[in-house]
Length: 135
Image 1 (cartoon, rainbow, N blue to C red):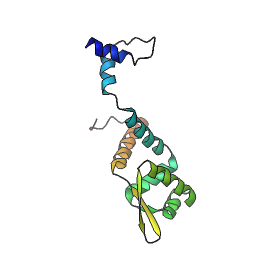
Image 2 (spheres, rainbow, N blue to C red; image 1 turned 45 degrees about the horizontal axis):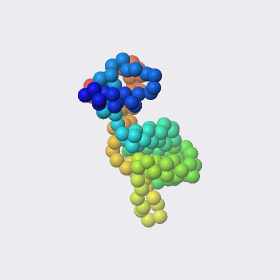
Image 3 (spheres, helix red, strand yellow; image 1 turned 180 degrees about the vertical axis):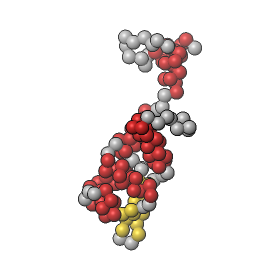
């Protein structure tokens, strides 16, 4: 076991000694992979833009074409197309063609859950509400 702790301590920046070596080792062992961190970071970066977030909020309700999203969000069709490409690259939206019109929708239902959690957090921050029972 000592060798495991020593091995994990190699990952600690030089000159730093953990206050709780066992706790640090436990956290290091259960830390998410760099690949997972990259996907989560990309998702939050995508959600960090107001235009993209407005697009996604609309797509939670129903699929839409670029023109209708442009009207809803208040930006040009070109700007919406650019944002949809960004969201599609991160597998947050998908598209389907009906004749000459392409409709966009959420790629999965996880975004709706993330939005609800973010809204609960906003209520917690702005209104001082307690954590919800799912925590």
